[in-house]
Length: 259
Image (cartoon, rainbow, N blue to C red; front, side, top):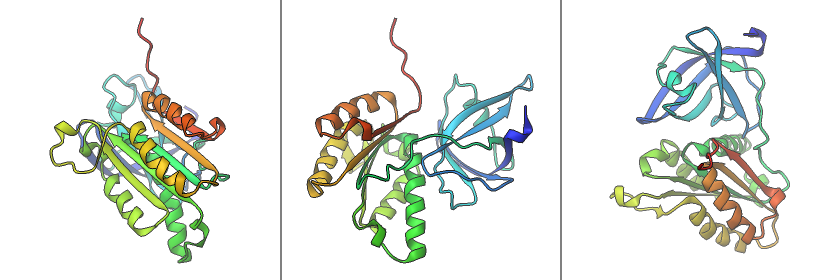
């Protein structure tokens, strides 16, 4: 391993959302620089001494001192089973180069953001950054024309994690943010009183409302998470006349075609 390409980081907090979902907060030994929406590559040494790496979207803002990740356990994965064995104080390697182009489309005014479970991470990074900057300036003037819709879906409400409360709080604080959590297996979630259905269907409902209120605005859409959601949402956005060049996507895995 070329150590000049990596930063060491220490886990300072771990929150288990469910058996297969966890939030990791990592304190890097050096200051990190990235653009909200980008991902970091984490690594751990394997039994044979080789470094096993995997890219994860960053949920934290670059204005925060810790790096935060919302990670789903993949039992057959090369890295997540080892990550889920780690606790506070344990160390991971972080590639110095942060990558990805799933960042805010600055040419747009209306931003439609759809995510399944952990796919909400890049939107958190974007909105946390904007919220922090606005609080520091004590003015919403820069955001008066921008509108953000975040549709965050999961099978059950527990899988929305700690971020449901955070995004609901941000939406109450800032009028330009609309947050819509939705649950697809609502029959297994008796206490859930919010939106029900798949992300792409709920996106259409709320996007129509937002776009009708800003008919002449440039619209950008962001799709992050499950590839089937991304494929379905692309079709819906095309019917809503969102230009294909303004539909941005980040797939978290690839669905294999049946043989």
